[in-house]
Length: 366
Ligand code: SF4
Image (cartoon, rainbow, N blue to C red; front, side, top):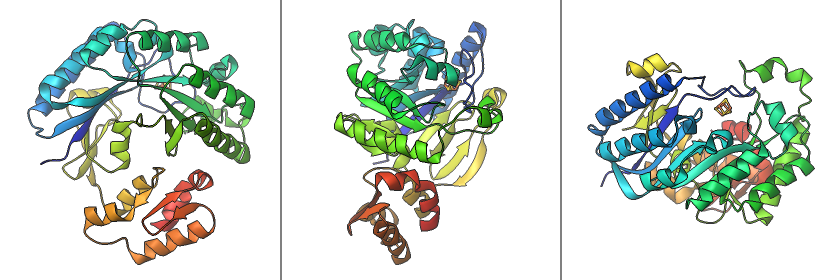
């Protein structure tokens, strides 16, 4: 039987631009939202007629999908269910901004089939939110989570950011405690990355950003503290209660296939990687750009090592029909001896301090 795939839908609109953000998003009017919804549904219909695989997860990301409102989101999901063979138990996630979350009809979204929310909280410290240029408040987060839980959403993830200007262990702990008190099942905790072409990049020397050591300290503290609070690390930046790992994102990290719909969305389908440019007109004109073949051994190893469970040698052999090259195993051993990895003959995975250097270690290994 064919492998199951994921569907990613990009919504390129936000109320305003956060100072650190490099995602493809911009402001939009109600008529832009209408037009985009219509175009998404058309594209979903035409793609659906060509795709035979079952769909095990659907993810609405952005931008701010929740800006479209519950009715449009429900109608897009209905088009997905009509167009594709979506499994009955599929994980269906939508990203929600705490401010627009106040106006969503969560009961309607639940009945439409959404069963997971990912809420962009970032911090519960108002000063930190302001520094990031976020427009929501901590009260918005509480209100949105409470309303969603009352409507029956029990699978909720909150995003946290680490390395915010002036952030300390204490303020990070406060934000983690805040998430735990809301009883959410999943926390994504990312280190702030200063991307070129963002206002933060232009001001980076004036921002009082934590230096590399301070960032490492925040990360290691978060991994340890989240673990004590029952949020087990399963990927570099992702933590959950058992059984609540993101199935859609895990599909990326295990090198399985997915179709992305929308400007800037990437796809990996039938062995080929391709994407739509960061341009809404390219999406409207159905233009995509090839990114070559995907899923080779290097890519597989790189993605698998993002996961806490790491690279399982037997799974590698099942996928590629050959054992992991001895040269790769030897390099893994070097990093294990230095305390950056755990290696037991069956699998290799990063330790928390290894995760901090994972990009450079992976490029040494491959
Ligand atoms: S809400 Fe998210 S996608 Fe929109 S500008 Fe802020 S960080 Fe970027």
